[in-house]
Length: 377
Image 1: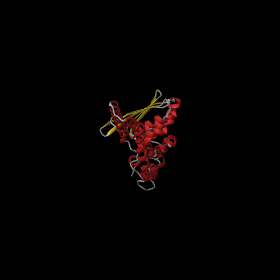
Image 2: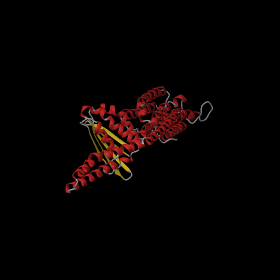
Image 3: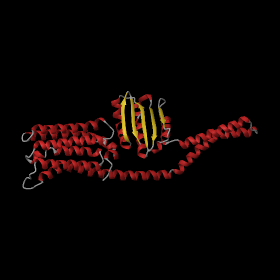
Image 4: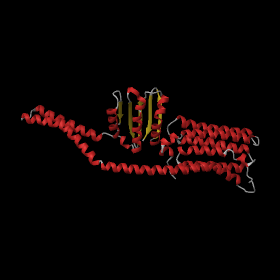
């Protein structure tokens, strides 16, 4: 069973499906209210039925607010809070109804099932299997306690019915998610293999381009110097000092090119193509930018490139600070936004979702016309 979630494997698709999650939250509220109203008259504890409905409404609100308000990943703590609230509503509803008709006993299983299904895209599949089966087992135990007798002469009928009503939808959603993740991983491996093949094919051209860059430096600085000496036919002290300055300059240039990280190179490219008011700053004293994998580098490139959509005519102002701590890297991205915070979040939502899926411990806020994004590598 895969440990990945659809949120990490396809963050843009999951973000696009957030409206479906909000719709599912509305369905949970509707089912809870209808189920509570239909079971209240025959319930042993009518107040407990409405308390269960209130807990379902609370769990649906938690889910909706997390998905609608934040573009970062739905973390484990939030997922457990939503499931715990839904499980409490389920157990409260079963206990409140008591030993009455089967339909009335199982009403709380349906909103619980939809709640678990709505969480499937956001949490790892193994975690969702454990949670779904755990909640279903708790429901079966609760039904056994409040309604131990079987119906239709079949002991365990109530327990099987409520387990199926809870587990069927989320387990089906988990199977579908695994299939989608397998397809995405297969496609990604194919694209990487193709990209690596193209890179190997272009290796000669890239090497020649680098060599030509070095030659152009020599033609611009060194060749005129030697031509002047050759024309004069002598070497004086000023020539020796000039030769020393040229050698140090060329050595520094080559060392800087070798030590330049991919992020420094990317910022240099952005400065060249950006407007005159654009500013890109990188602080990487520990030289840890290379620790980002391909997905993380692509996420950072996409987010920084998208800042132009909010900057307007003032240009982009972006800075990234990287600090290495043993095996972990802490990063902070700060960018000036040319739009109001709410509008900027709307524009940057897909890119923030990708960053949230690629990195761990992602936190961001948009206040005072500034985006502050913190993440760990």
